[in-house]
Length: 254
Image (cartoon, rainbow, N blue to C red; front, side):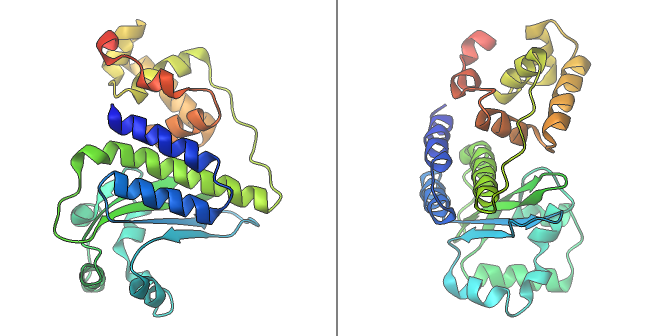
């Protein structure tokens, strides 16, 4: 539970960050707290918009400065994998998502030489709006900190949402009014956010697991998000859920 409490501390900081630079500084601190070495947040635009792209990272300067001018970013298999996946993935598992060409393999080899050895990437897709990714990276041969990976998903989604809203505000575009979830959708979402399976949620609420699935899918559709983590983040961000609800009492829930 301490990891989630640390996420709550991060969220409080990132929600009040006055600029993208401040979001990057908060995310850098959180990255170290969860035992990663580097982070990168990249946002691209799926639809015409005035907000423009966002890039925040503390990757080694030499790597970042040479990446775009050299055109090497076109060979980045992590970016391509994000177009095929809605769930987080480790870089070592890329070949399970897509076939890796010689150019892809050369790109990842150069990344390792630059100090970006292994990563955990969270794809983020907001239909018709901004989408992108947040990556947390290890600089050497150490494995990804398995105990931090669930928290990393929340860190990624909150940072991305905060950056998206700051860019909208800077462009004079107010974020659309938050959709309202029904009480039954919220009941299911709270328990799902605590890590409960559809079957367990159904047992606790007196529903079938199929009905739980339908409630959660309907909530995702209302928010236009692809994953449950993104749904939890948006509901927390908009005040429909509180951290106290999500943290709950696991002993009581069973």
